[in-house]
Length: 426
Image (cartoon, rainbow, N blue to C red; front, top):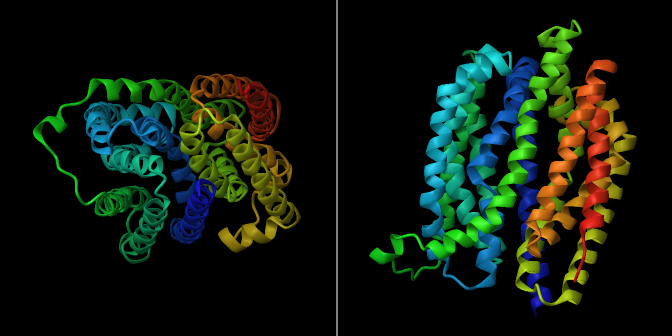
């Protein structure tokens, strides 16, 4: 029964993720064709900042909340009400910091003056993303995958509707305005997700006055999982935030123009990596489901091994099929999705390595479920550090952004080897 329940939950979440991702492709295609290459370049320059902010905002909440909820020791309402006041304070600090430092980040770090308004726009989305992540972690811990899958699709449908019907109203406005509006759509889509989760929460919840007083024991338990997760996310996303800054400064010193650099980086991120990451949503869904399952059955070593082997076999099967097709026909998919052939060379170089990239996800999910979040943090820190050092050195030596591509290859291989080596069952 447990086996069927887990597999049913995984399948439900995968189907929901496939639906959400398909809609996401239409969103990306429609959005990129509306704003053009200039808008794509601007959006990609700000994306590392956006990803860093989102990860600082959520603080690994879905993972921590799902692990604690899956153990069944505390009630869901107590977990959420004991966690959010702490998260809200952090959200407000981040929002204020972003607004006050928006000019410095845009002009000094990103060398893109018109990115200031984009930074202010993304700061406004923070509390909505945070609440949504908190509720998503609760449902994940309860292994109620249907509400999560439905919420993912709902969020994308609303975002697509906004892009089709609202964004064209701003077509005669500046590129900055269009990208800002696109970012602010997150407020509406995340709010819809929050309302959907609340409607699917247990109907008979009685809230008493004492429930709103944070339980310090729960807060401490959440912090135990959050601290290493936060460390890992902050390190990786801070480096991702610095990545375009480093690339911009080094390549400017080599005599390349800022517009050409933004174009190269946009092609690599928006076109090449987006296609290479296409199957990752299925793998991430599997890994996300794996974490609370492993945590719940922590003492059953045979069960953990069986679940990990199943996850790795499924990941390998999906990856080989997908990347074989992508390797043979990169130009076709680029033309189909983005009406361009730029970025095909990056895809052919990185395709074999992304099989290892995908295999790393179940290993991380299992390690997190076993409570070895510190191990995941250490591996992430080492790999990010090595990647950054190699990238900086090679950007000075190699033409264009080839140094970034080589550093990505090193990162994927090293990350897989270290995770595999770190996986131990006592």
